[in-house]
Image (cartoon, rainbow, N blue to C red):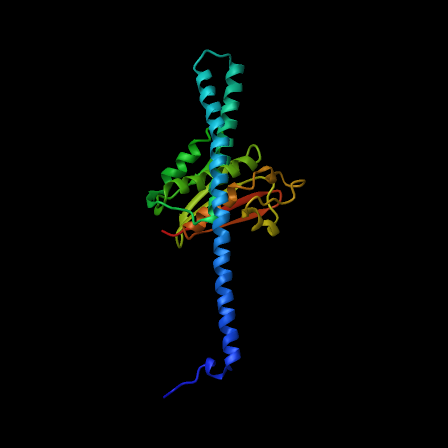
Length: 254
């Protein structure tokens, strides 16, 4: 038995109008796609230039600073060289974070996922801060993830906690299994207003930098963490209290 559909009730003119609208929508979509492609081509050139113009001289500074350390130096001169190296490595990390984040705005983050042991990687990051006190409880968990991105994720969150923690307080790290692999890191810094919980994960987002020391950051690291988590189909968030500190947490599927 024939069943009437919505097109049977349209006049010829109305049907032609709908077909023309569909054609216009198609062209709008194509033009938008081409526009995005043009933007990405421009961005690729910018990324290549940033990589060369910024990273090359920094690598040269790091190389020559390490070379100078091989010669006999006074304690004061060694301190100066170590400061140069520390600042240069930090700048190199920021540039790489920026490159990764810009790419993530235009193309899906590429992942090379394999089974990894989370505890070993977290301990590796913790041990890279010999002068910082940590209080940690880590479960031994095996997940499928991109090891480079996972290490970058842990490093960025730990670096963030170290930067804003108050002197004399231990940074707490906790991992556990509950509907997936859970990671929590707590600092005892200035804290964040609840209204800014989502804002701090946005690209170059800043809250009131006249009030919160936390805004001395670049606005890149946490946004990159969110991109890494979302690429792994996970979730990230923060809980905080002004004047008492913040806990950043994420959940990744096992």
